[in-house]
Image 1 (cartoon, one colour):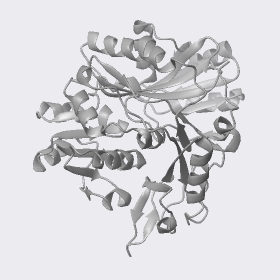
Image 2 (image 1 turned 180 degrees about the vertical axis):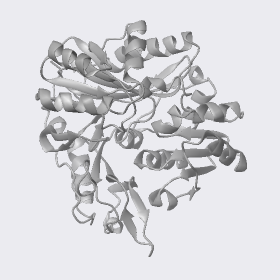
Image 3 (image 1 turned 120 degrees about the vertical axis):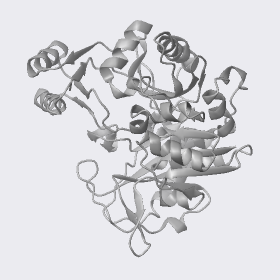
Length: 424
């Protein structure tokens, strides 16, 4: 099998790494990729959100499977174009990708599928926004309806901050709208569900850390770290989420004539009343993917091809490593507000065999030096016999990274490793 991975971040680096480990995959290409991916396989230039360009590239290299990583190409219809060209594609079409492209649409689908989630109001004017904020009260949860790279949500006790964020979302013009939701208490969890339009195969649970600073302080980011598995999660949670959430949504999308093929990311709040959906994404989440795929023993290429071809019902039960995995994100100075780029990165060669680095926001400078090129620069991943060992290995590796002014959270998986997390 020859696979083409579309995207340029740490998620795509993790996908490439897992696909290369699959004996059934002969060649893995990445487009556009990044300097880290370029060390292990060929990277090709492409406008990832241009459907015709992706199709042309896939045809030129006679690939058997296209795996679309980021959300923007999916919402742009890249998966539709690839499938129309007769090439197997892992990723939902444009209409199915609206589950992430519009929070309001996702709520509509959840209501039709009777999926447990928070009550929400969709506002299109300042008056409607203010009314919704007053109806729910603090803490306020305000979400940009469209794509926002994981940074479109504000959760705050300050009504003024909530109103300001909502108005900024509405100021985008056109059909802009903003979603105001009730606050869901309880620890959060992420579940990736592999879907082929009718069947659902869940991966293992993970938890990510959205806030930029330790102790869940500061603004939301695209994610500052993650770990898997969730040893504190209730027994049977994965099956419950598939039965009550993922499968009903896949069935509803099929009923609408827009079958969902790809990853349905279910972001959960584990409340006292049971799991409730915070959000759906339509692709592998970053940085949870880095931790989850580190533990997956089942060959990834065959699994994704089975989903792309509608054969998930033939898939054997997934196999998982016994170890725990921890991912720590090294971010650029100023991230998430105004990340500084172009800073040299060194020390990666000093990282031993106990951990590895996945590139996210990196580039090659004019002199060939590795430099920062985004907000989240690197994901450092480590496995261990338990979360404590995985944490120790990951943070020892992070200390080797030399990027002036960079920052990272020091508490990824800390409470879980201490047994301090519980479902109410």
